[in-house]
Amino acid sequence: MHKVGVIVGSIRQDSINRKYAAALTKLAQGKLDCRELRIDDLPLFNQDDEASPVPEVVRFKAEVKAADAILFVTPEHNRSIPAAMKNAIDWASRPPSDRSFKGKVAAITGTSKGRISTAVAQQHLRAIVNGHFLALVGSPEVFLNYNDALFDDDDNVLDETTKKHLTTFVDSFARLIDAFSK
Image (cartoon, rainbow, N blue to C red; front, side, top):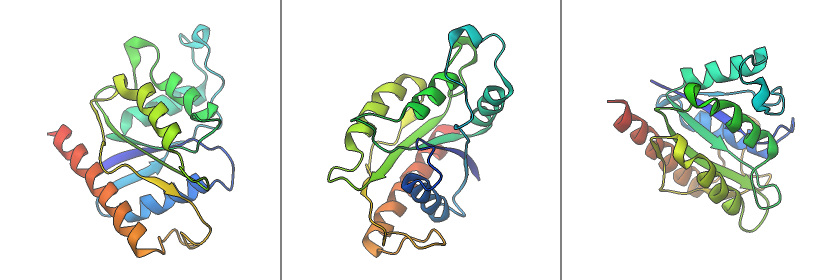
């Protein structure tokens, strides 16, 4: 089973994107081995620190390298991705001789309570990571409009239409990982 590193852009304890990532992880059971990668303890990226990174950066880069693929679950902050997510991407993609994303595929999704959900943040994230991955899931795109009745306390998706759409997303991601791992 393919290992997927899940990077949740929100570092809030009660993040709706973390709840969403947990629901996706549950839907992926039996298809993908998903594990959230911690980013809230990474120091602000500074190129001066690349030669001797702190243990948290070493851990994060090793976790990214150990994953077969990366799932980004992003909120939208001011029409972009959160600073914590950009910081994690900077650490994982630097230095050029030690890029942790190299040879991997990725998928991007996110949720918010706004009308267009995280569509703008996801487009921005695609532009940022496009050159770092072999491939990104292009379809289906999922801009999940969050509401409190979407998931239960056990990370189950309650709405059947949403569950079907998210299952299609997970299945597309699993197929892309399979295609590039052969």
